[in-house]
Structure formats: structure tokens, C-alpha cells
Image 1 (tube, rainbow, N blue to C red):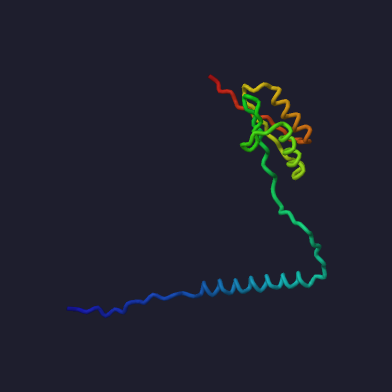
Image 2: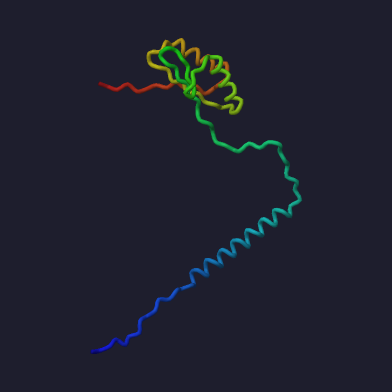
Amino acid sequence: MPLKTDSIEEPNLNLTPMIDIVFLLIIFFMVGTQFSELERELDVQVPSVAQAQPLIGLPDEIVVNIRRDGEIVLDTQVQSLEQLEQTLVAARQRFKQQAVMIRGDAQVPYQHVASVLSACHRAKIQSVSLATQLMRSQ
């Protein structure tokens, strides 16, 4: 009965790529530290502010819904024309290019839509759009 005499090759771990990565990380952090030291060496007094606001993108447009009975709904809350106008003025003070979309029911009298448009005009909202739906051809 023959016995196997071949030696079993043991697995080995190649550390060369890992050492390369470690050296790259060391170089990266050394260079990064150099830049931060140079920044601290500049003799500049940075101004301070009492209140800082984060930089944000454009706000979403305000959607005003007008129900069939003429109720004005803004963010699921029924509002009067005066309340709507106050809300729009406050929104315009926060962001000058605030956009408004008016979604009137197809059966609502146009007077209600015109009243909301007038409230937008008094609040100095410049970007007003009316929502419509494409007719389906039969």
C-alpha cells in the first residue's frame, strides 16, 4: 500500500498589496496635515456671525388647492384668503423666488381661482402656475 509522500503546500498570505495601501494612506494623511497647517499660518481674522443659516436649494413650490365649494386648502389645512395671503407673504420673505401652483377643481367657479391669483399678486409672488390635466381622447 503506497503512502503519499508529497508535501501539502501550505497557503501563504501576500502582504505586498496591503503594505502598498498602508504607505499610500500614510502619504495621504501627511499631505493633508501639511495643508491644514498652512491654513492656520495665514494671518486672517475670520468674521463671526450671530446666526448662521445653512445653504439650501430651491424650496418646493407651494400648492394651493381650491375645492368645488370654493374652500382654499394649503397643506391639508383650510384657509381663508387673508390667511393664504399672509402665508404667501411669509414664504416670499424667506425666499424671493417662491413659486406657487394653483390647483382648482374643474367645476369651481373661476372667481375663486381669480381671488387666489389676486392674493398671490398682493403677496408679490412672481412665479404662479395653474395645474391642468390633459384630456383623454376617446
